[in-house]
Length: 396
Ligand code: SF4
Image (cartoon, rainbow, N blue to C red; front, side):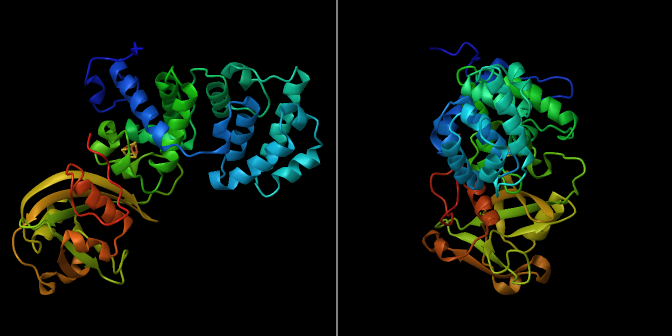
């Protein structure tokens, strides 16, 4: 059946915009987002035990366990807990000591106590969880996020949810400048309800969380394989590393870097430079890059020793190190002359250069950042020299 919310063809392609006072999205943009993300989720989702059921009680338990805890850690606890207390009634009748013993090692034991209190309240009123978000909010221990998860995943209710992953995705996708611990959170919650896909609310919410957990990660988002990259405002404006804005967090240093991917016109071999051993990424190879007071100055520093013609900016990648957030502008060009180790300036950060044939590229060591730069440089091409393990964003 045709989606009645869909706009005219191509309408969903523009960058997404949220202003301080309004969520200015067209129905075409919303439909494009929903279809793109749901399709991605169908093909990329992780198989997790709580995703094999729509039992509201099981989803409730999983959501409580997942708060502040990694998925890998939760899986065995969830499976043991569900085999010991398979229903809300079984849990409600269990002694608190047994419940805490089953939770032992998972940490944040208040969660277990709240879960037990909530389950006992539900059991006392007949044993069924309410299906609506508002009804669920009346159960002790269930907050807005958990209520949204249960209502949408178990009951198919068209309500959104915002956890840390979703907040980060929204902050970047829409370039939300507000503090995501304050007003930004309210903007994200309004967006979550506005964007929820009516044909599969639970799938949509899980897809957003999955994107935040596996692609739009806090430190090194993999924009090159992100299904929403073509409409992401932070990516288009080179602000991925700066968002989300979170008050009270010590701000890492923001650095803008220029990188040049230069290839030999005759055979496509690529110019690579080796980082000095004492520096970050020491001993690894990468396309030459430089920092400067501004993009123009950094590019000029590079071009002073990298002989390159037809230089064109092709995009940017974000990368987070422990105390620095990097935004790397990637330019492509053609190698326009020979280059020797003696040509490398001492302050460039490199101690060797090579023009490497495509067939030999996998013999060298690369950092994740170098892989991202190479993938960004050639994402419009069917063949290009990228080291093994490089994720490439498909052409859109
Ligand atoms: S393009 Fe990058 S920043 Fe934007 S949503 Fe995707 S992973 Fe996040």
